[in-house]
Length: 236
Length: 236
Image 1: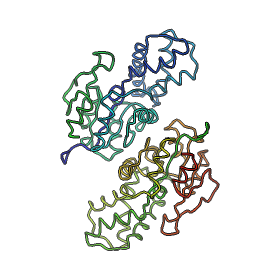
Image 2: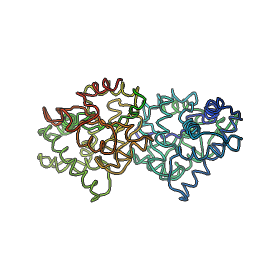
Image 3: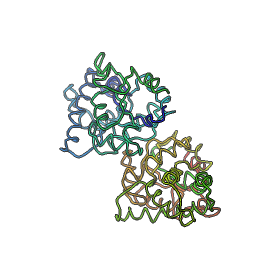
Image 4: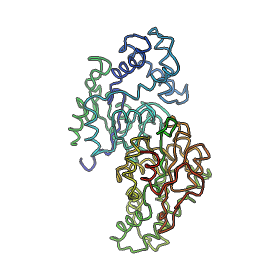
C-alpha cells in the first residue's frame, strides 16, 4: 500500500457482502413452510426488501426518530405477508422472520477476500443494519470486523452524510483515508461527496438474475467484479 | 450453559484485560529514552493513570461535553511529563505517547481465555476507551470482539448507568443476560445495580506488586483468580 493509501474499508453489507434475496427466501421458507404456508419465496423477499428505502426515508426525513433496522423489518413483515395471503402468524414467528436477516449467506467471494483485506486495512461495516444485526451476520459468516460502525452509531440512515462521517470520526480518520465499498451507486455517491474514496463491487444478480448493478453509475476509485478482485486491485 | 444463562460478556479493559502500568512504562521508555529522557517509567505510568478518574469526572458530572479518552490522555500527558522534569516534547511525540495506550500487553491468561469464551458468548469491551483505541488494542492483542460497545457509543463514562445500559440495548439483551467482567469493584457495583451479572477477575498487581484487587469488595456472581479460571467457571 502506498504511504498515502487508504487505512480503512467501510462495507455496505446487504447486497454487497450478503445475498439477502436468496437468503430471505430460503430462511422464510424454512420458517413458514412447516406452518403450512406456501408462497413465492423470492417474490416475498423482494417485496419485503422493497419496503426498505421508503421506511428508512421516514427516519432520514426527520418524520420519525431513529429506530433500529430490526424494528423496521419487524414492522414491515406483517403487511407484506398479508399481501402474500399469510395472516395467521404468531408474534414469535414474526420475530423469527426478523432474525432471518442475521442468517443471510455471503456471496461466495466474500469470506476469503475479507481475510485478505484484513491483513492490510481496518475493516468495518457501515451499513444501515443495527449493531446486533451486524454482529449476528458476522457470527453467521465468520466476518471479523475491527468495529461495527454505521447507522446505529450515528442514529440516522445512509445515505445521510452523518453516517459516513461518524464512521470516519470513530476511527480518527479523514474521509480520504477511508474507502466506501458497495454494490450501490447511491451509497458510493454519498460517500464520494464527503471525500471518502469509493470501490464498487458488481452484484449483477442482487435483485434476481441480471437485476443488479454490474458496473457503477459514476466514476469510482476502484470498480471490481467481486470482492476478491478488489483485494487484487488493492494489492492484498 | 444453562438455558437461562448469560448471553454476552462485557469487559472492562484497562487493568482487567491489559497491563496498562507495565505497558505504559515500557512504551514511554521506548518513545522518550531515545530522545535523551530518563525518568522513573513506572512512576510516570502511575501518575498518568492517576489523572484518569478526575478527568472522567468532569464529563460524568456534566461540567464538560464527552470527548474521547484518547483526547483526555493527550491533554493529561504534558503536565504529567512536566512534573517528571520533561518539558521539551514535540506534538508528534505527545501523539505517540497517546497512542501507547493502543499497544498495551494482555495479562498472560487473557488471549487464550477470550478464545474459549467466544465459543459460548458474545464478547464486547464495555470500556471507557474510545472505539479506535479499543480497535487498536484488539489488533495489538488479537482480541476478537463481536462489537465495540462502551463509553463512545453512549457519550458518557463508566460508572454512569447509561454506559452499561447502552451496551445491553445494542445487543438487544436484558441486563440479566449480560455479565460485566472487571477487576474493579466500583465497575461491578454500578453494573449490578442495573441488573447485570458480575464477574470479578483478580488483578492483584495492577497498580504495582500487591497493589490491585485480589478479591471483589462486594458479592459477585463469579470471582476468579484470572480469566482462564472464569472460563472454567462458566463451563467453557
